[in-house]
Length: 368
Ligand code: T4K
Image: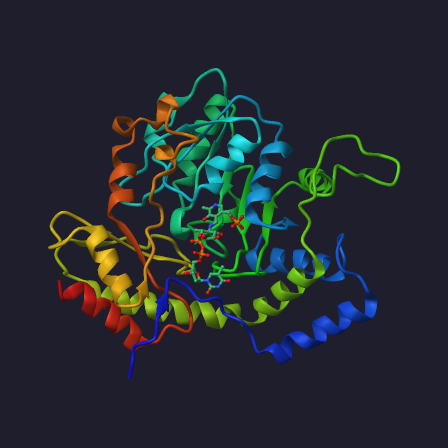
């Protein structure tokens, strides 16, 4: 029998029959968008699920990042990591701000706090770190620097749904945290995103920004845009929440299986899970020079075998045309990020992935 193709992820969906009552309600009420009942219910349920004070839902994570930058009224330069999905730097550029890249820490692949201070200028107003692959940043070290220089901190927490660090939800750190609910994420609403905040006054402003700046029929005091989540997406989220704990457990089993079976393979490094509560969103490995073939040769072998692993994050953001001319984008300044980008492969991980498929993936790695 021919082997099935395997993708880096496959979104989990509850049985369609469970979604029909939600659809029926939308059809009955004709409430399709603009902070409808499912939208309001999902905001409340997510606050409880994630243990956070306030959440504002968005149409996707990228517009949520842009709204977060706008809500904090930032100007000038924002320090960030080049080792991320392009949306991180794009959100800064789209907001008329300048991204300043700082290298990552080689063990966690997150922004290296010890290098942040050297990048601060009189134009710096914020830091935007990323909890890469859902592994928490060194939130305390980052906050110390932010406090010392009076900077805001917006976490790109697109990968960090329901991740906890030493003191509870990682999403409560910094001024704001931004989630993505894209189809490829642990919790998805097909497309979607959110800003998490601890300050109800800021939530009010964020809610206005995502609704054209509207306060009421007569008052539109500030510029805003359309970043709203529809009722259909919110209903999908409510249904997903009912199944999520099981799905994360299934991801955990796959993560543990990979870790056990890849132990001791020369030239393959698995990123440690440091957090108290992980979400097993990604399974990155680093293919070093000690491995018999290059990362890209291994990538091709996977492709030829119908296994679609991904090089998240290659090319590195700082090497892309919109950013490569920025002073801080120089390769020499970012050795760890450039090296990780040349070595990383994200292996398939999703609840439906079968253990025999994990074995097939590991066997291919071990057989080179
Ligand atoms: N910040 C960070 C750190 C992020 O990683 C992201 C998004 C953002 C911000 C922005 O959040 P959003 O605005 O997207 O909410 C994907 C996603 O499009 C993107 O959301 C994600 N990060 C990024 C890491 O990955 P692609 O181009 O790799 O996706 P794609 O279409 O190749 O999908 C990967 C695999 O998933 C496919 O091979 C098959 C499978 N798949 C995908 C989709 C969309 C399905 O089975 N069904 C599907 O519907 O970017």
